[in-house]
Length: 587
Ligand code: ADP
Ligand code: MG
Image (cartoon, rainbow, N blue to C red; front, top):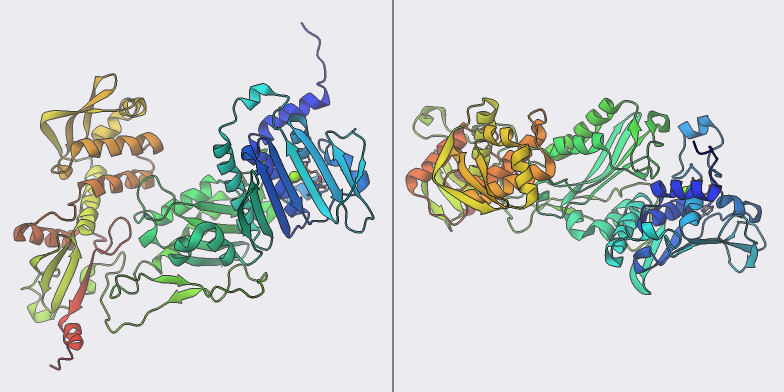
């Protein structure tokens, strides 16, 4: 039996580095967090070759005293906590005291710093026991990391291309910068300027990072539940599917990926956002630090809540509330200009006090037309006033009088005109029918007269094997026709008429990516919404009058027919009175 030995310190750090220093972006994250913990308001970042060759961060924080410089390089040396109580209430981003030591063990690290009120700057290169050198610096810190993994070539091999590593670094900067709009950030890569974000408020930072499109189509969330609070901005459901998904969630100022929060988000957006997508949001959850354990993961991107159910409910309800108030587009009458989140862009002094500026509001355009809109979860006929005496003659959605540009169905009702987006409406109908049939385990299948074969990659083939039963339950009968070929024998009867190969391809892709289980209704519904989108009539298909009327009758029988699965309205009504008013016609 070999003798038991304690490991040398450098080796311990290198082992720890395996968890903390995954790639250049993780080094950058630790260094940026240290700058923010030190109270910096201006942070300059210089990278070379995706950060693998150089990461240099210059900050204007409190700096490190000469006698503490060596300690900064030492494992388990931190200025941030002193006791277990401190750990339970920690408010700084770092506290484990291992980041710099880990980085120093796998790269060439140097720190130059001049602490506030000290006469001189000092520099330490390499390790805790190196000689301190006097240096020139006005204040703050310069942390420089060169040649990541120069001494661990096996690890170096895992680094991706400079472009990929740089993309990860940018993502890290975005996360940190969103949580700290009060600090300025600038970035250069290989000597080229990438951005410069001025200090400001959250809205200004969101604008810089998530872009104008997000700002124009999002709304503020401000929910205060006493010990819990949530603030930030979320995408309007109408745009949730068309705008690139960028999901940023923070707990007590720390970017986290948390199952509880993301599940609550998906649940709240469920039925308006389909597919495997996350809605674009930037949300900050704040709670008593003792109610959340941040020390679950070395990189601290995961947390554990003491009462995750309460968190789930709070996030879900806050978001759902914000979404419901958005469910009705305010100005269908102005189709080219959807509701806009209007921000007076200010160039004046930045605000630090409020997280989101009070001048943020919806610009409500006043138009002369007041158009009835179906509200989510309410039956559309609550909104179409049909005189009691004639109710029997006209069905609520009226009778089709024609098809406009292959997109809309025009229908005459008892007291006016209804315009229906036929694809959106049909999609909702198919979706609700699929849900009902699968719930009742009575999905009708259509066996194809001639089975269709299609090429499929290994993931899709594995998906068929793994989810055979689920697929059958949804009405898909699939098999293997070769090592890279599958055969479609039957599809759900509801979806015949579409393109079975494309449909199956999408189903397998989504199923392979996100899995599917009957216990998770939300996930299942996402998949069904995607399927419904494929199965629904496409725009530009000519419908016969009986087909149009059939669609109108189906809408009358479908729950939530007022919105398609992506949250767009499916129809609106114009009453005779409104038409008369348009033509200045007194009656
Ligand atoms: P932790 O952040 O967990 O305390 P680190 O290894 O990241 O551990 O840093 C060790 C210590 O070095 C910190 O506790 C802090 O006192 C000091 N330090 C690191 N970077 C900076 C900085 N940019 N400005 C001021 N102090 C810093
Ligand atoms: Mg740290």
